[in-house]
Length: 530
View 1 (cartoon, rainbow, N blue to C red):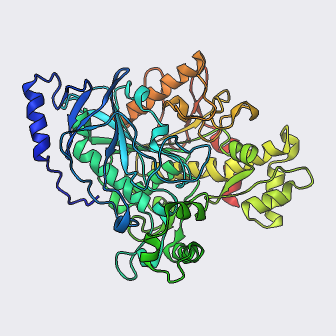
View 2 (view 1 turned 180 degrees about the vertical axis):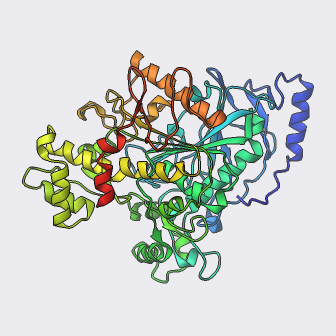
View 3 (view 1 turned 90 degrees about the vertical axis):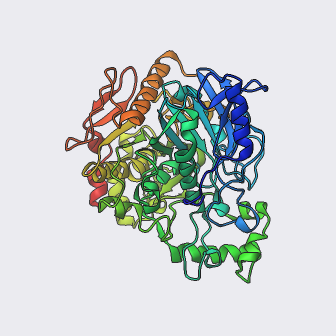
């Protein structure tokens, strides 16, 4: 979306607003029209949502024009306005992607730049804090409809979940796609996220939210996205706080030249030997999706959205100094190593075959891309004798190397210049929504999300027991407190800021507690020295 775009209310919307006002609407900016649902006048037109437990939901709201045809691989543009009242009771199509455990149900379409709003009130003077949620999925999978913000919104916040372009459609870098010769290309999905934040600035007050109190939150690739926006000059002023869930695994991005070199190879494979933008823009969506890798991490320094690697910017203090909540789960890699025989290493997925005592060091060397001598050192630091099974040892060391210790490093960088709060989600009884009962219970990648959001489309649905629900209540309250005032602490859950003692809050049952031994538990001195 163009930042200079003026959000004028269309004449038709003004007529609708007048009609609603004359009908005696009870809440400013909202009313129940003849269709029976709550109606709001946005900057692009009127929308009718649905009443839900404790509030209201509006789904499938366009925040940018369809990125199709000549708009494929261009910065998002303003959405067209409409006449009458637009139905906002159903989710819009998700962005195109390969089938996976995270694939949202329902239709997929290139026309997918939509967001959803869950709100406890539609009073325009309510000024409730806003949480904008960016889903994960390696920048190639998942969608906003997999995250229902109704329960979180009941804690007094307005929750916005967004779609953004994925895979080749969102992250292909190619010289022919640059807006000018020699200019940047790629990171269109990140531009979409910025456009959604601009929509929030313009329109969220109409849904009871405070446009000047926005918390940007995300998990996995969504968490990496939040870190990107913290360091991106083009994201400054679009949010006031940041929540990073399992997002510190990709701090070193590739250069634009490397990304465009891959783009040239991709164009050849796609059947575009002339390397032209015209050929790429006429390629079938299915071909683009299927030919692209399963993940688009760690991302690229395109020179526009991202001007330097995330880690370099954070270390130098070149980031938006807003309050930050950053955390990981107990054993992030467990779901990958034990469930998918993959690992996240250096921000990319690599094969991780189950090790045996005979192959342990070789698997370490292969997965982490290190020399045999370094693999031997790592094996000595994580001896098989200390773990019930070799697969668990591999999971622990990879989790420490790729998630826990990078998160700790991020905390140390950001705490020098901004209020920083750290956590580890440690409820090892958490249901395995994406692996089912076949995977032994450990708090792993994505385990914490069900404690914050309803996940109606999880492949192995489960209900939290009373003890787990108590932790979920504490977590939602902490996230809401942080969104409201930049501090997640409460009388029920004291949460000290990250400091020289490296205080990390262990989110566990029966009661969260402060852990000062996080660095030791995860061998972070060892990884820092390597």
